Amino acid sequence: MQRAFTAIHHFLYRAHFMGIPHNPALGYRPEIDGLRALAVIPVILYHAGLPLFSGGFVGVDIFFVISGYLITSIILAQMLNGRFSLIDFYERRARRILPALFVMMLVCLPVAWLTLDPSDLKYFAKSLVAVPTFSSNLLFWLESGYFDATADSNPCCTPGRSR
Image 1 (cartoon, one colour):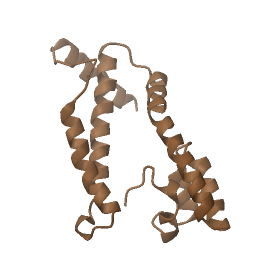
Image 2 (cartoon, rainbow, N blue to C red):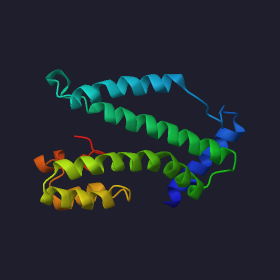
Image 3 (tube, rainbow, N blue to C red):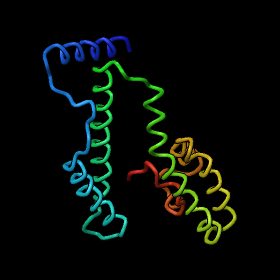
Image 4 (cartoon, one colour):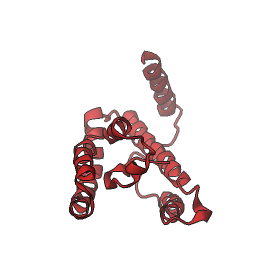
């Protein structure tokens, strides 16, 4: 771990003193929105069940690459400016992710109540606890197979899931 921090420190030192340009504000990037749009189309078509898009889940991988690039850019810019805080970083991520996650859970709750049988409803309730703690993949792995047919009937099984 110390090696990783040393390597990052050397990179930041060279970047700062060699004048490698960086934009601490980062701002809006329309080309990244374009990539997101290109990535979401095959995902939607895959979930629509169109046979031509059986590999549409690759769009999720594109989202991971975009997220990694953006998050790394933000962290490096803050480190170069001496303003990086891991606590602040995770607080900003939580403020961005959790509201949409809770809305999704609130929408799924009445639908599950009306459509699931008691055993599936019990499993759904467990997933409602696991999803906001970001431990849902562990629950789905322990309770059923991650790729089992029963996992497809759980509306909370989608966050972070790629097939």
